[in-house]
Each structure stands twice: as structure tokens, then as C-alpha cells.
Length: 130
Image 1: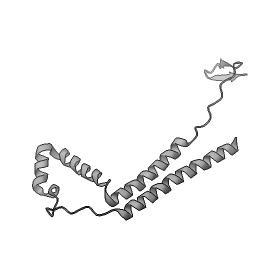
Image 2: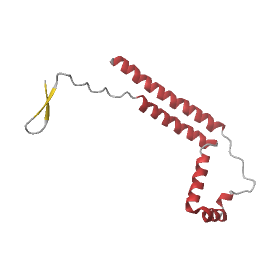
Image 3: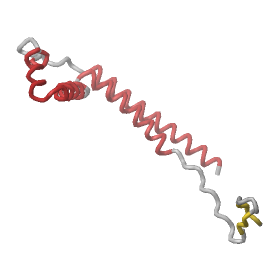
Image 4: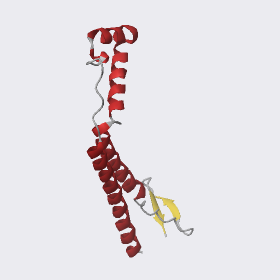
């Protein structure tokens, strides 16, 4: 039984290392082949102007500005070199999730024998009698 446990423990580590290795190789390939995004024909981002930000705040309040910034940041994670870092992080998180999910649970406590009886002590605590 102990040998099987050691073998399973080793396989858990091998699989998690393989997940990280494949993720890092994919991230490296993405990083090396990523091209910079095309330039904006206007020469600036309209979202960065004070007028645009003022109108966004006027129509939706501060929450609208925060959601817009969050959306732009989140969209940026899935393009170019940022995607490489995202893939690397997700592979590490996936390997950790695999390790946690594949960890065996401790054995359940054995059920009490049917011959055991519980007797109450005079001081109020319970004790097993065999």
C-alpha cells in the first residue's frame, strides 16, 4: 500500500511539472512570435483624452470609468507579449489546482464496533466502555 502511495505521489508531481513545462514552452513561443500592435491612425488613443473621460464620467459616473479601464486592461491580457505572461501564469495556476485536486484525502475514521456502549460518568462526560 505504501508503494502505491509513493508511485501516485510521484505521478502527481510528474504531471504537474509537465503542465508547467508545456505552459512555459507555449508562453515562450508566444512571446517570441508576438508582433507589436498596429499603430493608431489618429496618432493618439481617444480614450486618453480629457474630453472623452469627462463624457464617460458624465454619462456613467466614476464606476463607468473604472469598468472601462478594467475592460481595457483585461482585453490587453489576451494580445501580444502580454498573452505570453498570461499563459505562463495560467499554467502555474493549473498545476497548483491539479496538485490540490489530486491530493488524496485522509482515511475515514473506523466505525465504532457494535459491541461498544456509551456510559455517562457522574461528572457528566461520556466515555466508551468495552
